Length: 413
Image 1: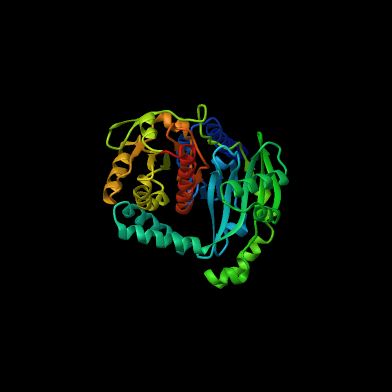
Image 2: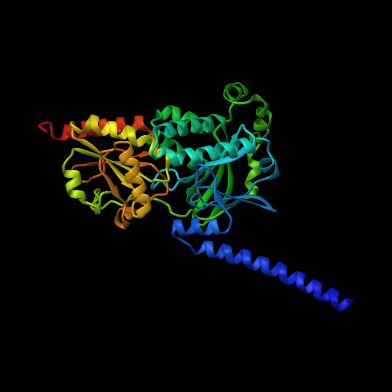
């Protein structure tokens, strides 16, 4: 009897050891990966799935719900029971570098005033309509309406920011303030007021990065109930009331796939092909216009697809003035994605040039976020400021600004 007990005990110890070894082996495999897509593929093998509209990945098991956001430096976030068991839904946005080359990474944690079943149904409908939206204007409009429902239900809980170096809360606020002014179009005094009001709590370090939990303010009851079901407000207020306690649930790593536009002497040079297979040289592409707006998109980015018909109108409007829009299809080196893009562009009558992001272009524009938009002069030199994310108003404003700038250099043209 004693021998049998010893055997059972030994077997249990070996099983536990095997589980620990397996877990360590999986993490070691992830730690050795530098290619972003390979990293995502391994996460999928381990049972993680992407949270809607983010580069944050989630897995739920016996140990509870765990998030990871490798491009934002979050190795793991084991959701506390009050978050994972909430009546409303806890979701995430972002999950990558905020601005290419800034070194600032971020994840926004949000509260959705809807039940888990309502959330799953909404995501299912978004998934279905996004497929048909590529080739049907009615489905595209329905997708936009569903996206509005998601946005209206969402309220901020807190953000997780990572900053390069042993930065302080003041360093973080200063960097965010500069980004608000430079890329967000905020007046400097207003940006100072917004960032001064932020509550910032140190959360950890990893390599040469420091991480913080940040709360920029929560919606008051009047604003919340104007958009959402009032019965969710008490829970939202409770969860957002003390964010510092969540910091112990995080572990961090150095962010993967930090982006930076790689320019040689301020200009770019490349050769690729358009979606019809015709060769394209950057020198020819840029020389034909005073200003070229390059809009980087992907077939997996529904927001990108929604704005393309408007970009066609913008291209027609400013072409006579010497500006052009070029689409850079980031997943265009995948034949299936390239064909899907061709079908979509044909369906919506898109005539401006779309080119394929080959390895050389991906080296110039390494990114995990779409859309990204840059402006170049006739010599291929970057001009003005890029636009991060989808912002049709800002696209046009900066296109007009850059056209005026180029005309001022040579008034005769």
